[in-house]
Image 1 (tube, rainbow, N blue to C red):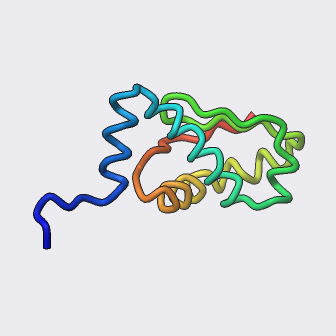
Image 2 (tube, one colour):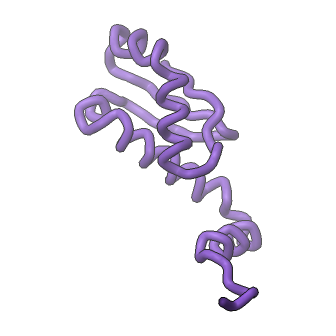
Length: 95
């Protein structure tokens, strides 16, 4: 096997860093992973989703839903990071 072989993800990471778009790519990936993790129904009950500096800010229509998700946030963080295959998300803030 060739010693210079690297997975495509390795090369993409280098390109993202050179173009200075790593944060933007992480933002899109985290938001999509959140939507996939919580499902279509909870995504429809979400008013706004924003990712900044390893934090996901989620604005919800329902205070009861906000309270419920607050207690499940560490599990959501773990699932999102597992989906992405790396620890990108550190905190979720529900509003």
